[in-house]
Image 1 (cartoon, rainbow, N blue to C red):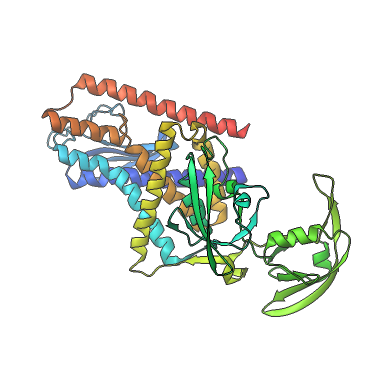
Image 2: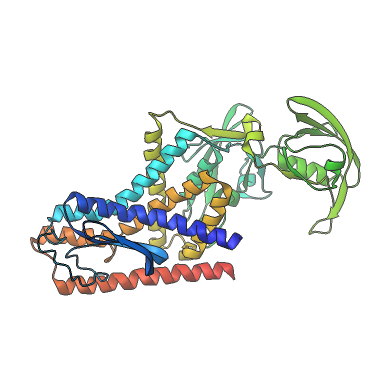
Length: 453
């Protein structure tokens, strides 16, 4: 069932972002009265199709890895011969250079618009995220070496304001492949402090690690019980899901990491746990069990798992991002711009070699991420749709023949030279573009296979 769910999530995600892209081309063509012959999502054998009163053929292909809008008179490899007489209809070649440029750009623009609308919607309904407090620092990590400790609240990275933990990873993502210094400002006991962390070719290889974890920074997770082990000590002695553990043997507990460390030092012992349940304090006595860890050490445990339900968490541990009806559209545009800049920077670093090309992902990785995002809920799934929609929009704007960016380049050349690019030049550039795109897809697919094995 998990595989079927992953496949369905992938098809839904790709269909949405590709469908919106092609819809942009379609609506722009219709606006300029250019006759559209075909509107297709996916490739290969048609699963279903229909035709409207304007003789436009709509279909959905077996392989949901792309799509196209075919206009009358358009010179591209996908075009097929037509038996219907369209002598009175306006063709793509009869449109002005400006009209063709708008039609071409409308696809990527639709992807950016989709992302902005998604982020606008998420701002309206509100999203709850991890706060920017540090919960745990990996020993001997860069953050540990340069003075950042647990319970610090990160407020700025490289002069960029930080509100939630997502902002930490976004700001750090911009520094992947860089050398120099990461400047971090944080609050400790209401005192503002700073740290300058030196980096060199940071995460330039195929590390596939979250930037915050690469620095040794873990989020602050509250010691709230999410699930209990059946017949475990916590269950036997009356602990319940949603309980907030405040201390163990009178030692204050602020984070899940602290709780885990303290319990680990108390194998097979009678302990006293203070909890907060429904705003009421209680004290529970229980006996821990033990297990042998990977290093052969005896460790204590009580049979509980951390809560991932933000609604159960104390307010200090989360950051709620919610905007008014008037400010939500602005937030949507800002988020789209922010991720667009990040992706453009990453593309530039890939081209320059600052980031390993092994980081490129293909359809397998996207399908896995789509399935995970769908399982996490509609907010995570919508966020992924927005991010991949921006990726698709930017990818299509690259000046590669066969992509929208390549077509815009040809239109610009035509405008400069005062006449259309020759058919021979178009044919060879299209072939080159096809080779480049197919090579990129094969390379990304190979990376996916390498990750699996």
